[in-house]
Length: 269
Image (tube, rainbow, N blue to C red; front, side, top):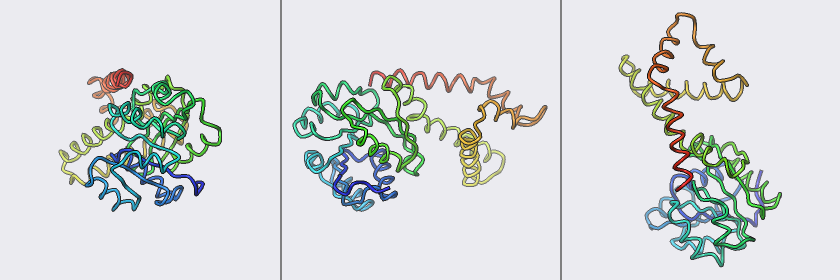
């Protein structure tokens, strides 16, 4: 898939998420580097982005907006309102993509006007390696054709699904923040293997590949995670010993409680 050559996508802000998206889009060839522009607040960041991706960079947000058909707001959530207010005149006829938690579509429409084209979304950082999980929710002004283009953009760095806006806080907990918990799990598994005498780099490889394989089993076997867990647990075996300890220490309830708090916080950012 290649995009319409006349379309240009702009990024306001160049943090980790923007870089992951830019990397995915360029790697897939869906947009060329000439069809992309990004702004940041420091010349140092821009130099890095330019060197890494070969795209046009600028310190001026207005330049990004003027040159783009699609504008991705990739700044910290607290900066959203001021950027929208400062640029509402030139943003009115663009497709504006929000990747921040806790910023409802109605906020954008209240500043940019009822006719504004808004896509609320939030990819996660595994987009960096083409395995992102993005949820998207378009407002009523985005056409079917535009939605297809936007879905194709997000598909360049992973999976994408359309959800109702009311599910966004739950999505942030289950996909946006969750890679952090998985990294903690892999780190702890690695530490335990090191304790058992294994070299650290090898320990992390074994742990990470096991997590990757287990996730793939869930996605491809169509079996309930509980069934897959039972398949690893032989009667009186080693795995059930580990499972019993995790249950005793509240492994599941800790994850559920962590995600509940993330979900609550996402709603009022």
